[in-house]
Length: 298
Image (cartoon, rainbow, N blue to C red; front, side, top):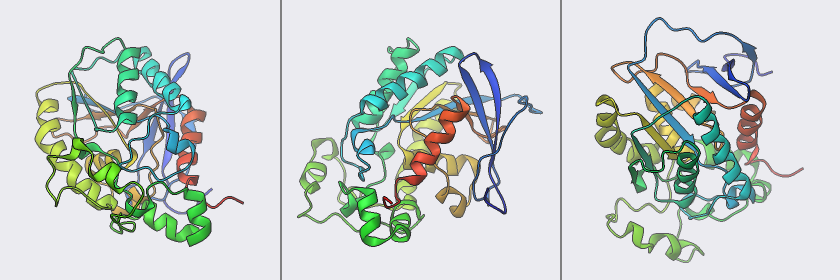
């Protein structure tokens, strides 16, 4: 157990196969896991509900490679994670009006699978590069454990998890430079918009304008919004909603394929901590797996 300020989780059983895992956030916190079963209580009713889901495991997640803007597809495990995410939403009775995702197939396919699972494939879907994963620059394609063995776990953690320090940039001689930078889905981006690498701060800076200009008005109109995106673009939204510090967001690990529910007041402030729709053990293991990706193999 970590000492000091901690993030704990409480769980509410809502169905035979589903749990809502509710996180209690200390905005200055380091994070650990402490589970107990308690009823969810709140002094006010939610004006809006928002559901976020990180894409299921991709083929490159499975190989523990830095993926970023490379368009890796879901692995078989990732497709099953997305299917389970859809099942959790179906069992909880969720209906949506509009969906948002990135232009990367692992997020798009996750959304397709989820919408199929809740029988709402007819919903409008808006895709944007602004919800893409963080661009990992010159690290793209490298194995995280091998990179940690070469450069040290501390350096890799800085590249992966720091708030405002970007990884090395992707130069024109990089194996994936043309595959990414010359892709026609980015043809309308200006030179300033098309990154060669990004810190989390950079990722948030390009995601939040879309959140504020496109998604927020839909929520305030009463639309029920589902966002299927990536670990870092979603961390940016979470940081914004929760008012989290830079230190706290660095330690937040979002699991793949598990829906996250936010209940918001009229000012889009959470009236409850984030709620994970998934069984307790799966959520815990998924978060631990994300945290362990940048460690060298023993």
